[in-house]
Image 1 (cartoon, rainbow, N blue to C red):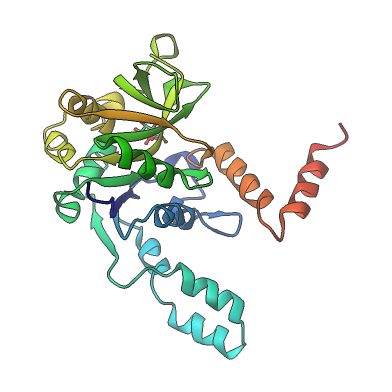
Image 2 (image 1 turned 60 degrees about the vertical axis):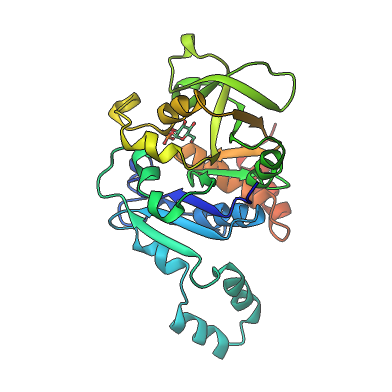
Length: 289
Ligand code: G1P
């Protein structure tokens, strides 16, 4: 089996749920503690062996492309001031030259359509998808846990975890839940709470075979009037193996204001330098117990 080398990161969304913060800044560039959210997602993918990143982007998103480029003036100023630690960090965060591609989704037709826009760059190989709204703290990284499972079972694989409100996510119908790696018999995008097949939601990390692209090409609109990746995956499930991995770790959904706040707190608390002081701040705001 060939290794998973490419990852698609759909970043074309307008970030309407976190306006006005996202009026002139891409939501993926909003800082989560001390770095843009997108940096965590790229780091997670790198830790899983991803070599090439395909960003599906849109208008007003050029800050993402600039972030991964050299910032000549900034870097030479930092050099002049002997700020070597931060310079080294900026250098570490830079991608290998030629390892990032940017393709545009010209109309907001849904996640399924966004992924389809990456088809020519991904080509004919299994690939990963990471939805950058979701930050995942896990060791090994969530995608690395998935790659390890994929090496054993092949086919298609998604990360899942329990949720309280299934109506906001893609929900899976597992065959049995005796272990963390399970076969599925169905998936549904944003089902009403009463009819959800389980409480396991799709975390926003996928390893898919390239056959998904042909299905996405003629996928009709689904939940919310959008072309849904989940609907195309259900069709792929008819002919290919599909597993869900209940990974070990914790996800943070930055797609809502409170989710974003929670992510900020979570990343501050695990920071080696500032974590203890951040915990003190949390206690201060919580007030006397
Ligand atoms: C998307 C997927 C959904 C998944 C979710 C995770 O929904 O369609 O299946 O559970 O991401 O964040 P969205 O958040 O784009 O509405």
